[in-house]
Length: 342
Image 1: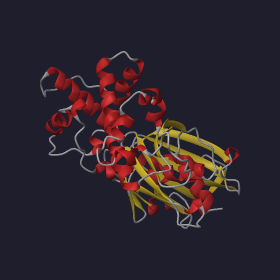
Image 2: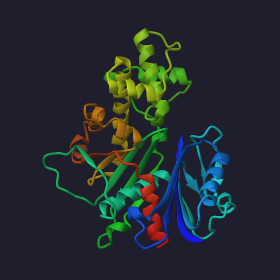
Image 3: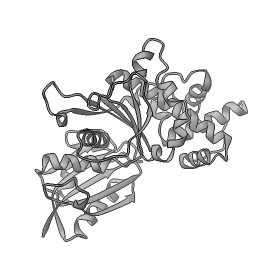
Image 4: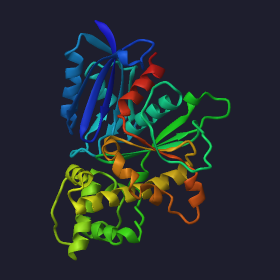
């Protein structure tokens, strides 16, 4: 049988799979053999999806790189955004016929960070839109950078400049779990949102992902409705997709306010990450929601809240901010495959 490399991106809601030719110019789009996507949220469905990809093709997978929306530890990943929080291991994947020594599991934000490294080193092209740049900023295409991707949850990653003399491809990349740290106040513009949600969610404190995620958008919408009604009781429930679409369409003032608060909170989270990594080569906001909401983001308080720090405002204003509307994770897995399995 013909040889191929299996690439997978397993998210909290959607999963995508791709088979590519095993050859030197792996990152060329002509290397793609087939691609499929589906909505799933449990281990059994995932394994069946992978099995179908492998058996319904005339190709045999001689290597595989799979990215998961969950922390990877000891070659095992736990899908925290799935209802059952299933754990998937390399052993599970090898049982499907994937090669034991050429199968790699990574976090999905590591995959996205690898895509960004591939872009910055000229290996791939991406649509990158500038959102903010200070007048005095000096172009530094390769330096520290951070990546924030809101979705079902919110993903966070950092890229760290390689040592002097090292090739840019040797930059370190790390996925973070800063989104699960305690969320700070949102300021007077959204006074009371966190307090209402602490009561509604029965939590002493909220994490950033309680605000910046699909569920977070729904939380914010209900909190703002409660504040407007003067009660913490149950309010109208809308899905995150409905809230965002109504906000973008301009047909629902309450939804626009909720989406505005959402990006205000995203700016606050991004400030925390930026102060940790000092990303002189850029802050990048990506993902499907970014692609859909680009025009809204440009007129939101995202950048203003990102830079809202009395002590470190000048430093924060020195970091350029970009929007990436493209899907990054499979590109990142493909780039890693080109490095590990040439």
